[in-house]
Image 1 (cartoon, rainbow, N blue to C red):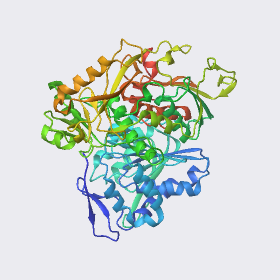
Image 2: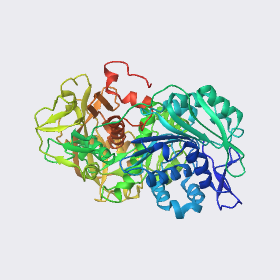
Image 3: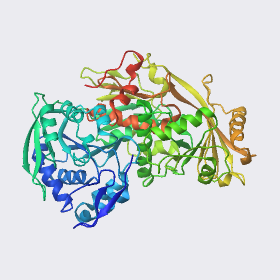
Image 4: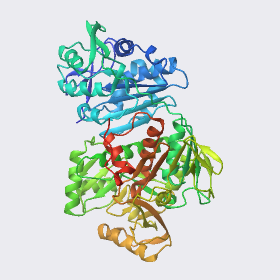
Length: 606
């Protein structure tokens, strides 16, 4: 799926050429000057965003990111501080960051700080939607996928304001310049939407005109005589999606609530956390160590795409937070053992169908898994080098670090006011987010949500002479972490729907150890040095419940055993909805998360 890039001997030291399409990524004469001539001037930027509070650019072909960097640079120099730029880009064959970094070297003097920021947030090369919070003003959504498949999945309530059509030349890569792509452009455009492209190919001109765009030839850049630019000719008014929401009350101080507060704050909103207990992360989110992994399936689906996006987003965010707060982040990798024929089949299909670069996922034989993990294993399975462990309790505290927080809060039930907001203990909020686990369904009108608790107990172990060798997480239905900063392994976890208490049980420790001994008997015997039991919330269909119940009422619940990753991605979905901005996930994944799935068929995208 992914291609390497090779240098050419040109004026610039690293003009990249795709081996797959035998074409270059930008002009060998001056890539940045080409971007400014074709895409910025071709879309009348910066004048086009002068009167827009939120301006949305969509691009077909991210490549090295040069177009994005140039647009970001121009936006911050010309826009007002209150304005926002959403930049959405599609790329089927993401480059490695090393190739990108070398290619951008000629412009480090001008774009260096922005290049470094993009480098810090550049996604793992795994298929799907990737939301990057670049700055308070600029948001980048990178979609690593075939644009023909991904563009129909894009939900942008405000519509696209400018299109950058920058795929490889139509003669080299005709699959990127299709009638399907042009039709989707029309769906996502309004009467003031513009486009620009470096090519003047007849099939592109005819395809855009058929889809409802006016097209004109303009002088091209450098050795290219002509380029195309134009605008949408359809009678479609630009949607008014301005949100006046500012103050957000969030009920719940676990991962769901604190992640929502963290993300909403970064979007410029004013969240306030209410937690009934005396501390944050009092329940299952209070575990001292937890694993972050995606949930595997044989094939891609709306559910798997959600977990992949959530996992990749979590990896980026944890790396960023670790630099400012000790969250006991350990990117040690995870080994997932295929302990039976069903798992062998599913894990092999996962590696084959998910479209990940091999540096992020490999299916390995036992010998290679043993080398990766540090143990002598007898099972084949998956290796994810970017996975790891983090302290959920410390992560909650880091998320809430600069958030107004009210603990020991027992407010009267929130009630709507006459202006569409919410009153909590005499304070008014524009929006209410319920992130209080199974208690969410106790709120008036939400009893339809089939949320229940599942008891889980983890066991803390003193390392043995053999277990000290473990370098990665070992996942086998249960899991064992490598020795953490506190010197202990964490082993988990029981899964007990029929229990509703957090009392530590010795028999649960025995159960956890028995499951480990079945796949790695040589690691024991262990000394148990601690244990913790808690209740996590799950939904009837074991998928999170995230979305709107009403215009100003939202929920984030049912995250289950993957809450470290799903709560963060869910928080971005809530931010998109509250602010009425482009979605960070495909509309299929968002519909799959919707609370309305339990009461009526969810609506498809417009």
